[in-house]
Length: 143
Image (cartoon, rainbow, N blue to C red; front, side, top):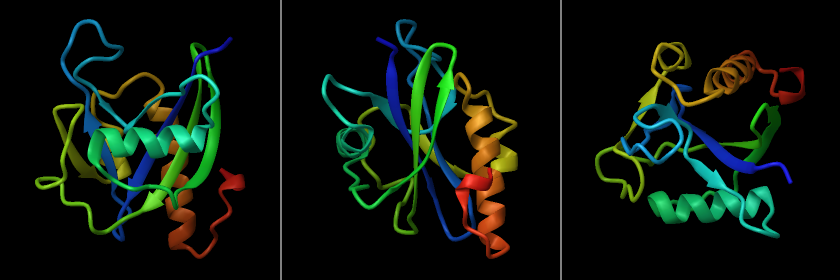
């Protein structure tokens, strides 16, 4: 069975996205790169249940009201991407149980970072969607 993951791009009113700097451990995928928070689906777990569980474990953050953005078929996995606006998350006081740090970025700035595998594709699409929201069209199906 194909590996499946769930990730979330949290964004604020300024349409910045929150990324996590992955741990710098040689035994994890894409160490020391920036990524959307998330993780692997457990057996018999839905993508929504996965991202809610992962965010509670990693950042003690309730994302149960998030929205499914898009599912991607990458060469090594299926990744289910969720989005949610939050303006209460503080990068210095939010508990972080995985990763080195979290930080807000504009999509343009995020695309200049050393990103985890395939994250540039997701950020590009989310950037278009956020721009459509700015212009009053919110249909992520147009991405």
